[in-house]
Image (tube, rainbow, N blue to C red; front, side, top):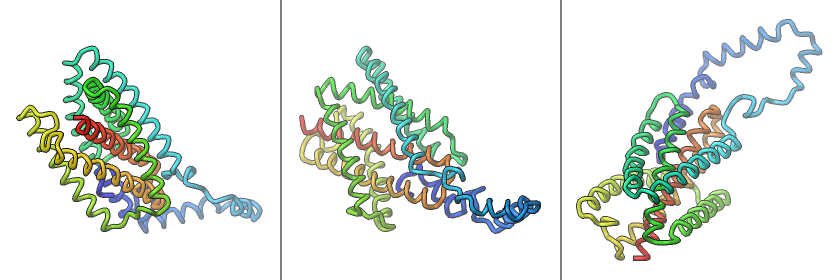
Length: 282
């Protein structure tokens, strides 16, 4: 799961047995002793009735389920859409304030993302705050691009949703297999592109160019195509991380982290589509 920093804690906790969710011999011994004490005074019929009860599922044991992840993802997505609409409206009415939302949102999501990824204790309020800031940022960026290139936002949204559906089907039908080698390669590429994106942003600011390296020429379009492809394949890693968390019996609270990681990738893919289509129109 190392390709997405938001998932690092899940992987580490899975290796150590999820504190409080088993994996330690001492805990297992204590649980067995507690079970014996609880059934000590039961009659034979009561013990038989207890034995006949169905095994507790993931919901009863408060572990991650696919429903948890889907509902949390939809909730965060709704927050991004609502605050995105606010960012769009503010930017349309006051371009200066819109640029402040753009810059502030970009810095805010970077800082909050790092805190969420490396904070020892999972914080749901921070994840919700990230969705708010990300929505404001996305709304401001979308309004700017749509003002310069009318209709481009609708194209980027359609492309993002289509890519999401395509990658999900490709993953479910085994057309894309996430292996350890695949993860290592993707991780290096993602971190490499992240460094490039920071350098490119600084270069664009210093040179007052819209796209930075490559501009809207063939090189710039190739860079955007690479970024779109990288973000698309990151979705496959996200799907696999969700399945791993469910298989390993991750605590239910991690569904927030899984949903957060998926939303981050989707917004990244959307932004890259905006840049690609803008370059093509130039």
